[in-house]
Image (cartoon, rainbow over all chains, first blue to last red):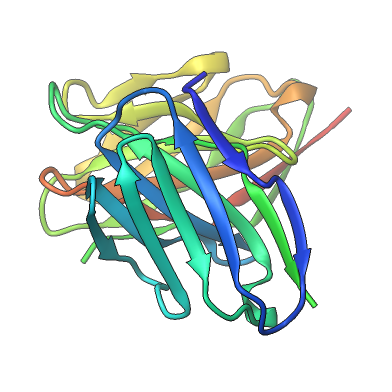
Length: 115
Length: 113
């Protein structure tokens, strides 16, 4: 299994509070991603990073920010959590190049509940 | 833009029967295609991928998928379902130059004893 950990694994918070989720990898992969998974929507990309301090928005980035100060860590922050951000959040990593088909490897997920 | 459509959000098969999970993609250029499996309370695990080397791709756990350009499809099959195959399955597409994946909405597979 790819060395990807996410913390916390479960979190319950209240509307309006800030929340930070952490993704840590030991694979030295260049690309890191944050997705949210909701019933009927599959996985939707929030933000991704293609290197230290290099990030870009995904499909559902509103209300989220990210930071990557080290290759191994990618943080997702909800500045002011809302109930619509209740979801399961997955981190993924990939290393493009080679013969192509640069698959993404996924972490175990963080279940966030915003009350 | 890339997109993926998975027909059937829920599929039920009897143990030992053929598994067929459908995936159609939309892409202006030949894409890379992937199938992932997700067991309850776990992350996604790669089953197989298509990168243009061969149109019939074999993956783990006896699954395979065939890339059909004329039908823009990448359906997942397994000849004989096992109880342990019960899970959520996701099809995904990425373009050749990009590093973004676009996932389908998933198909939940139930295996009936």
